[in-house]
Length: 161
Image (cartoon, rainbow, N blue to C red; front, side, top):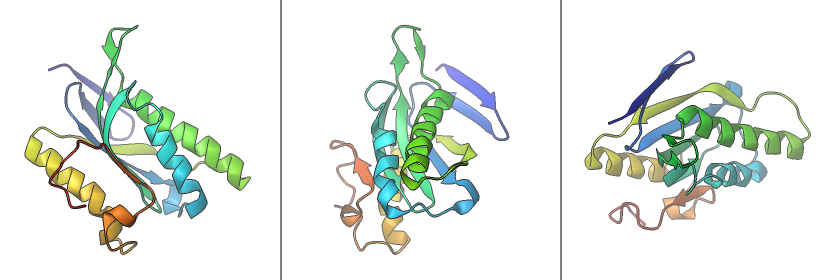
């Protein structure tokens, strides 16, 4: 199983053929205005099907969760790195947010938390965790009511909703 490792402040281990659970947070836990959360979700979905296969994503008021498996870059014949995938999603969304809100400065913390999901049970549990995040936060009664969530249609058919 090919693995890549890189370090910023936190160590990041990538297993090419495994799903990765990713969390990234706003800078200083800034609360994203509701009107920009759809832009963040759109940025998370942008490279789905090319750079990665997204299973689920949720944009919370001050953080984002994604579960995806990196794809192979056919031209370079290598797997897209977590750094490249995250830089694209975070950079694109930050640019859009700053433009719409007429602000400058950092939107996201430089680091992301990532964890390789090694078993289907672990994957199912993390998908349910992501889907239920808005419910646990008291934002909605059921995850299907939350506007800034996306789930691949065939992912975890046993998840609520």
